[in-house]
Amino acid sequence: MTIKTNRAILAMMLCCIAVLSFPVMAKDFIYIPCVNALEIIDCETDTVVESIPYNDYIVNSVFSPDKKRYYLNAFHSVYAIDTTTNKLIDTYKFSSELSRVTILGLGVSNDNSQLYLSCAIVKKKQNIPKLNVLPPQFVVYDIKTKKMVKNYQIPCSFTGVVPLRNDNDNVILVGLDIHKLNLKTGKLEKLMGMLNPEKGEEAKNGLVIWQNNYPGDHGLFANPYYTESGMGYFIVDKNTGKVSTLKGKDVWFEYSNVISPDKKYLYGVMDELVKIDMKTGETIKAIPVKKGTCYALTLTSDGKKIYVGPAGPDMSVYDTETLELIGTIPLAGDGVIAHLLPK
Image 1: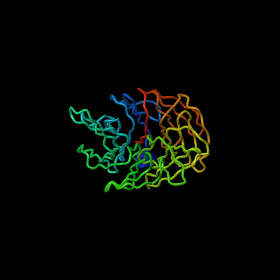
Image 2 (image 1 turned 30 degrees about the vertical axis):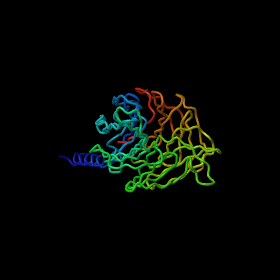
Image 3 (image 1 turned 45 degrees about the vertical axis):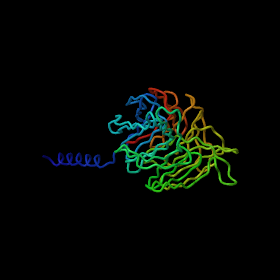
Image 4 (image 1 turned 60 degrees about the vertical axis):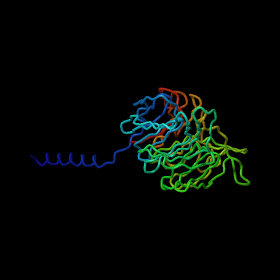
């Protein structure tokens, strides 16, 4: 074997080592629970690559912190999707003939073992024409045993259940006001008045359903609110539990928000797609959504594309720099929520 051949073999070996040692880049997928199937979009090709059938209306959804499960919140059941195989692997049913449990908010514990449920519960006795409406309940549900392990009475059925990434003992609940709930004692601490503001503050009115976050992102959950004098955004930092506000310079009708990976921009959507400066609250750009009203927003992990929708049976893809429409992706049906999963 010649010296030249040896050098060629050595060069090839070094190239192989370099390739193997180079970190594998995550690939972005978007999970979209429609009325009759969970659609999964590949963000490289902007096409639906998986469709998992079921028959229910999904009002909310959330990934487990370890990204292994995607939980779909129907009003009376929760469906568990294995994100490795993209299969429906379990259904947790909470209502029965004599007990109607309506799940209005959903979260997952940091150790992936428990569901946090904000519930409205109505009970009845057989052959007695009388309903017993219980006070709103926060339920801690063990996924493995399929049993409730704790429950606490809460002031209202919160639609926003926000687990804290570095705090296993507390969860933030967002509804008529923003509270912190201690999971060990059930003690509630009011963090911010919304419809029940502190003296001298304006009431804040917001529809809190969409948490457009995913495991491993910056952990900033933003939501629009409206007052007599204008609008703003409350921001919950899931890493620290801090709640802050950003005053908007203009008034836009928005269902939900998402914050860019570099934390410089906030996007909002309803009939327009709006781009806001996170430092000043000023509108950078706003455009009408071509397909009409949309609910959720999903950013790619590099922040270059934003997916608007669903509402009807499609997702629109826009460039985040220019807000120009890139394309539209047809879906199997209508939906209200979507989430990114890099894997």
